[in-house]
Length: 51
Length: 198
Image (cartoon, rainbow over all chains, first blue to last red):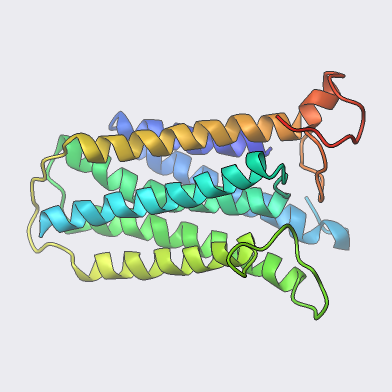
């Protein structure tokens, strides 16, 4: 999961560099949501509420 | 003024890159494996740097307007809020008196506390940038240095992806307190749970 998020961030930067700004926006949003979900998982794992 | 804005964007990328390289040096020189929350904070910092990098990428091909600046620094502030929440949680996990904290402190503070300071600084610098928005679209000449800054960031993200893959192995999540590189164990290159150094 962590590796995939890093690859998403890498794809975001590459899309920015290639001038694909709409795609970069989508990838950035996907990176943020994935990071937030992974944080949610780690924060709630001990409580039995993780995804 | 446009030069100042682009220099500030480069400064943001270089500052975040230095922090990420520092975390990398702690991982490899001190053999201190990052926990899942440390990795999440690294992600937050990279996403913070993606804002100024986006600004440089836009300025490379066309005129940049106030809307471009606002979007790029809005992106940084969003990422800083996300990363700040992660580092604040880790600070709270170790806030009890007598708790030694996770890892070795550096300059008196643990890395996750420094990370929280970095995220607050990103919000402050982005706010300053938003105060200095240009009134009209401007053409900025992008030379070697801004391109090198973006290239450095891309290299750091790629290196982190590789390092995390080695640490995580073929597992979906990192363990709460990693003690070895999972990939080496998965490939039977080290004894199970033996601390390994690259």
